[in-house]
Image (cartoon, rainbow, N blue to C red; front, side, top):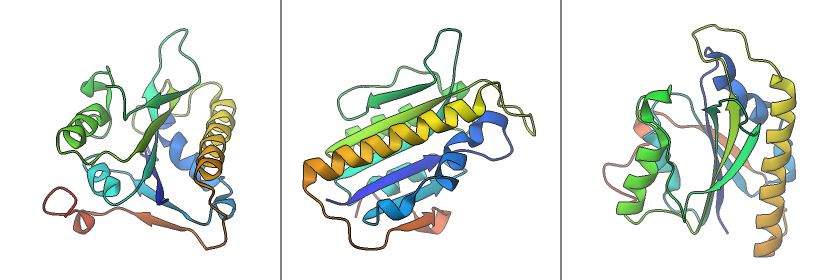
Length: 177
């Protein structure tokens, strides 16, 4: 099973860096067959990252309100995100990209979002209250998701994993050529 973790965020926008910070502290060596992809600018690059994988986990920060949980897991394969694009610091919102991939029939069989609550998104703004707790909860949620996938697929981990940063030249001209 080919699995990708797609990490979205921007380091200079307060809490929006949390998924990147989780990846920085994540024990990637425990998951050598998983490819980790970092996208810090154009969320449309998620489309490219969905190609030729069986499972994808997107990690991103969401603008949380009072009473929102610190970390959510959302099945993107079987549901639609009902959030506003204007809240995205990536330009287009993730929900737009997911719906486009759905229409192009390029969604992987297993496709989930791990969303980490965020409260402060201003340029060079300090991180919001409870950042470390949310970071640890997000890291635990990602590890549990990857462990569940490995068990479900019967994969024995024995190869070295990789991390790449998606750039404009990585994008396909069409949908998953």
